[in-house]
Length: 183
Image (cartoon, rainbow, N blue to C red):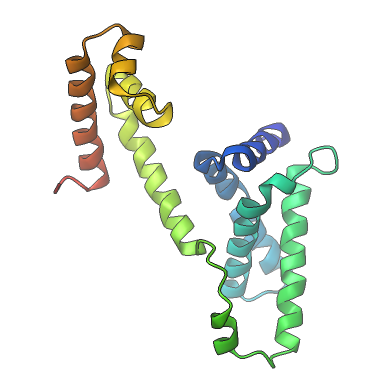
């Protein structure tokens, strides 16, 4: 990925919490951060944890990224380096118990929840690719542009019943592709 594309994805995450943009950032940086941690001698599980923590920090602090000050990769790897230093400091000061840490959970989404969401998003993109162009357009306008059915009918110059039928058929295909067809 080009630095400009990565910067655009960071801006999209910062501005609108764009999950698709974050998914691209995650797919690009998470393996690289993990490899960086492994190269620095971290155990595999700790490297994975730090890569996840890095990407969570990217998600939470994307609004702090300034393209005038650093390339996206430099910014992400600075976060990773700082998290690694913090982890090493914690290991040297084990006086804080796990129970105390659990009392101060911050309510942020867990890394595995974000990863599951990313996997589901990839499956959803695959399901959307199976739709007819007409169905895909109705889904895009309904769910991504947040238009009401009458507004979609007006925009596409089709009857309201057609919009509803296309949307219903699209949802059946999507649910089946996602394994949610038991509803």
